[in-house]
Image 1 (cartoon, rainbow, N blue to C red):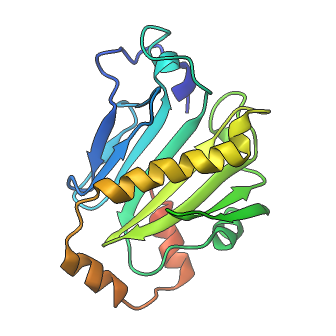
Image 2: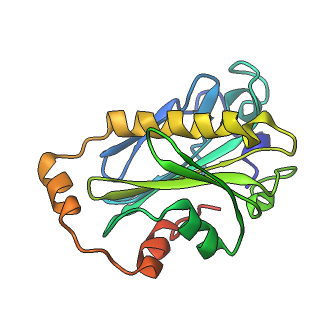
Image 3: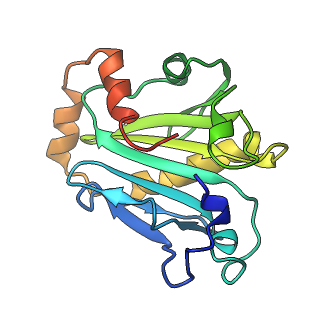
Length: 200
């Protein structure tokens, strides 16, 4: 994915926010970060959005200079609890370097896999998931080698994006109640749904 060097994304096309999964889930870019319209997609109950520097995506025409990074948000139907960071690491075949229990989600730093995100991205990356009503939300952050976003700053960034998703979601009470009473599916099924999109 070349979101950090996207010369075709014009200032007019960049999005500050977007709605996924039948408008139930809103993804908003923090100041200086925009949603790439070229990779965004949404259906009635799922969706995908990627956020990166507005300044870089616009070829320097819009937005302040911020730390380069790529965040992907994946929305899929939930049928049980979100996988924890250890389960995510196992599914990816990598090592969990650290685990952080944050206000919006449990987040893990994965040892490998981030190198495929974009040119110069570090193998280490942050990845977590949470359930919101009938939806499973997966959030992943990739950053260049030696970026401060590979550490605590990146974990805080993911928490900020995830907190905004929680605050702006349109999920009715019946959907929340139904989800809380659902039986737990096998881990493989939950992970398969979470990674069924173009998430990296």
